[in-house]
Image (cartoon, rainbow, N blue to C red; front, side, top):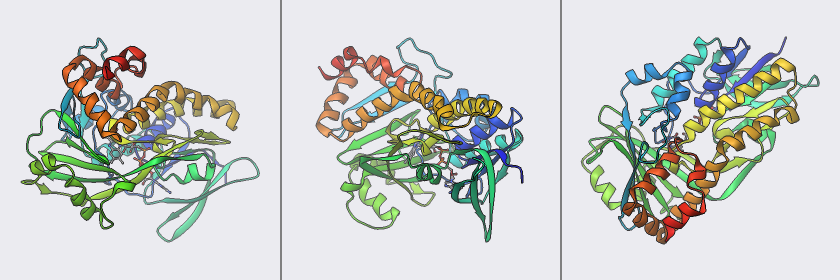
Length: 401
Ligand SMILES: Cc1cc2nc3c(=O)[nH]c(=O)nc-3n(C[C@H](O)[C@H](O)[C@H](O)COP(=O)(O)OP(=O)(O)OC[C@H]3O[C@@H](n4cnc5c(N)ncnc54)[C@H](O)[C@@H]3O)c2cc1C
């Protein structure tokens, strides 16, 4: 049988976005996901303001704004000693992005809208279909072995896009996965009646981890606890771990005490993994499959969506010219470094500060006294301000001294 042009493995934000952008250009795309949508996904569920630009391009922003959601205008960060600062996306830094706020809404809704957009644009979607293995055929195409219920078969494509998330099978097959030393897990749930929520997302840092609170519409708050695997208080179910870890955040626990848990506690991780390159012969990686470090700055969804734009542009070029070898697709690696390189550095600097309470307390004191610096930092997290604005010596000097 004739190979497909593209098989996209995974229909989360990265996969659905790539599938949409390629299918709307008339390219033959099959997109597979082992899940059936809508499905929950452990995530803090807020999007950086700039994500709205890509969602508009994909034709889903208006429909998403009709769903229950919240608009977050910035972030409030609390350090281990209780010092808090607020940064606003549209602060006094002279930068304006697509929007002054980020949307926060359940992943069930976001991801389902994105999959249906891919379908409308002409991609063929196979839900409930897991990819079990990949291999290269003698003609250079990639064979993808899939299972749907008890049925096993294989499909072939000129190009496979691995958008299969944190534990990507495609990335493992490519052999480019690298792991960091500080590995974290996350435990996430939805709660009602959390006291004191406003129009900003919150991050509370303590020794060994942090907890994020984000209102996601209909009076529901997303509660996400992230902890270093080396600092876990016990072994046990996600619920037990969640409860034990919350004990490290007494001020947050007090605000949650009158609330009700609405969903099971779901776990994710361990994370701190990236790939040495996101391309191989006839293969590209996008979203978490390519790079996942730490959700503290809350931009994985934007990286997945914008990464999909970059991948789709290079994939289309390769399919038209018939040049799909690793050396041809390497331009996509360069595009990714240009688009995300600054954020990768900043992510690592922030993760190091979060892991060092004395330093984080100091930085929080400086930022609470200098609102403009806090706005600038949160503007970078919101993808409104270029990371180079905060990675320059002058900014770092003002932060530390
Ligand atoms: C605790 C936590 C909090 C976070 N908070 C935020 C936040 O607030 N804001 C933000 O922007 N980002 C956040 N992130 C990051 C964000 O969740 C990810 O970056 C984003 O989901 C990446 O999208 P993706 O499409 O690459 O992967 P995913 O959303 O993981 O989608 C991958 C898809 O691939 C499918 N799949 C996997 N393996 C296979 C297989 N073998 N066969 C078929 N299908 C397969 C899965 O079913 C899934 O649907 C958070 C992450 C965590 C862990």
